[in-house]
Length: 175
Image: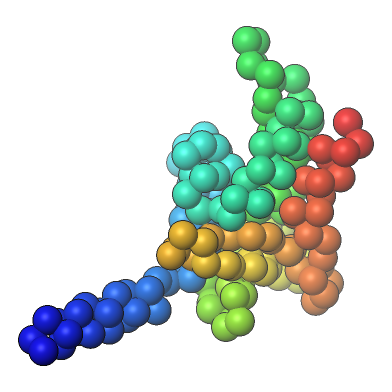
């Protein structure tokens, strides 16, 4: 009987640990890396989608699609390499130009959705268009007992924009 009680207690602890997985954690790491790349004191040069981060923070489906698309880099890869970033811009910052990230907020919306908000346009001027937040919606799944990013949707003019995952699929198919 003591064995059954101990087994039940372990089962409850394991279930609690699974529920305790923070769905904002992979998003927070992606945003922290991207913010570091745009920091005023110099870019860290870390690749948000580099291995092993790609394998650890993103779903197997997203990672596979990214790897296929990276075989068709937007720019010539360094000598001796056959892959590179499929993007001709920073999909997290939302462009090729930007400012240091300010006022970063990560909000769990529930139902596998985490929203990241930050301002990375203030250094361009004082106009209202430069005061608006960049908003990204991350779709989170559980894979292997941990939360992972399965897709990212930039919000454009208040509406969810095109899926980053779909963009990667198009890149892989078109080039």
